[in-house]
Length: 451
Length: 86
Image (cartoon, rainbow over all chains, first blue to last red; front, side, top):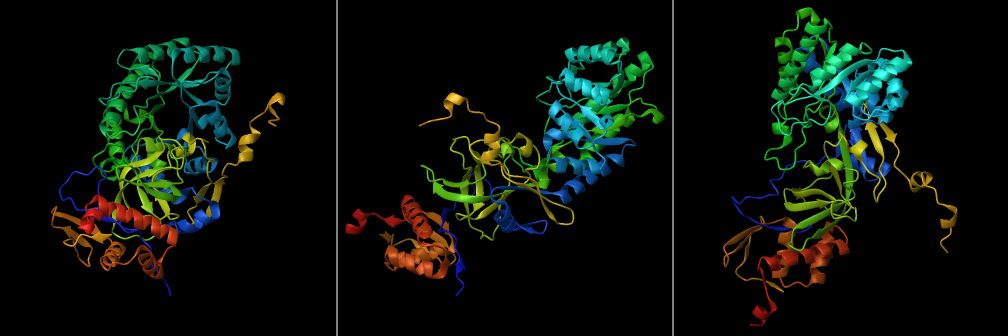
C-alpha cells in the first residue's frame, strides 16, 4: 500500500494584522527540475550541496542587455567582469557572446590570456597591478585603466623601458547623487584629480589615452546615477578633445547594475524594485546622446556589468540536515549549505524553494548552514514550507560572486555543473578533496611524527 | 495528557481556545494527532497509527510528535497534571 507523504505536525497561532518579520510565504510550487534536470537526481549524482548554472539563462540575459543598449546607442561593447564568476566555462560563454574580458588582478589577467582572449580585448582594472602584470598588459596591447598616480608613473617608466605606447584610460570617481559615494578607486572628478591625471598623461606623450572609466557603486538601484556619471565622463572627454585635439575612443561606465535578488532590510523583493536593463540603457544612452559629441564622433560605450547578467543563472542545491527549536521556540532548519559557499547570504535574503511537493502550511524559520560557527546563517527569518530531514532545497540567484568569493572553510567546496542550452549536463568544476588541500601543505621534518 | 476540554478543533484544521480567545491553524496530520489525543490514545498507539498511514520512520515521528506537544503546552492547550488531578 502506498503511504501518504509525511509532513510533520504543526500548529500556528493566527494573528491577523500583526507585523511579522518573517514575511509572508513566497512559494506555491516546488522547484523539482532545472532546465529539464531533476534536482533530486543531480544531487544524487553529484553530491550535496551542488551549484547548478543555466547556460540558457546566461545567454538570454546577455542578449536582453545587448538589445537594451544597442537599440538606443550605436556603439556598445560588453566586457565580462571576471571577479563576478571566473569559472573558465562561464567566461567562455560570455566571450562566445562577444564580450571582452574585464580583469582586476594578474591572476585574472592570466586566466583571460589562457582562455585565448585577444590581449587587445582585455580591460585591466584595479588598484593592484604589479610591474610584471603591467609589462604583460603593455606587451599584449591591453587596455590599462589607471587607478592611482603611482601606477601612472610606473606605466610611464615601463613605456620608456619597453619602448611601447601603452593604451590607457583612467578610472574616475565622482558624486552621482548616491550614497555611499565610491571614492577609493581612481581619480576624483569634482576636486580636479581626474583632470590633473589626464593632463599628466597627455603631456607625458608616453601613453595613448584611449578611454575614460568609472564604476559608481554596486547593486545600484538608481539608473539616474549612471546618467550623471555618463554626463561627467562625456564632459571630460570633450575637454580633452578641446584642449589636446585628442579623441577619446571609449567611455566605460563599469558595472554595478542590480540583479533581482533582495537586499537585506528591503521592504519589497528585488524582483519588484531592481531596474531593468532598459532602465539603465535609457539613462546612459540619453546622457551620452545629449552630450556635445558630434554625431560621427560618439565614443564606444563599454559596460562591465557582471551581477545582473549571471546572478539568476546560478542555483545552489542542498539538503536538510535537521529541524530543531531555539530557546524561544523559533523553528531552526539546518542545511548542508554554509556561508562559506554562499557568501552573498551576508547581504541578500536569498529565495529558498523546496525541491519536492509541499502543502500550504509554513513555519517561521531561521535557516542555518552546517558550519560549527555562529555566523553561519543563510536566512535569519523566512516563512518556509515544512521540510523533513533529507529533503532538498534550491537557493535562487547565486550565480554572482559565490563561485569566486567562496572559502574552503570547515567543509570542502562542492561540484559545479552547467546545463547547456540543449539541456546537457556538464561538470565544470570538481569538488575539492582532502588530497587537494593537503597537496598545498608541507610539514617540516620535526613535525612529521606525532606519536 | 489531555487536550483542554473547551478547545474546539475543526476537521479543516482550525483550533479555537475560548479561554484565551486565541485561534490556531493546524495541518492535517496535526488534526489527526489531536483527535487521537482526545481519544486518550497512548504515544505508542498514536505512533503506530501514524506510521501505518504515513511514509516516515519511528524516530522522525517521535521527535516531531514531542516537538508538537511542546508547542501545545506553550499555547496552554494541554491540561497540566495539577489540573488533571483536580
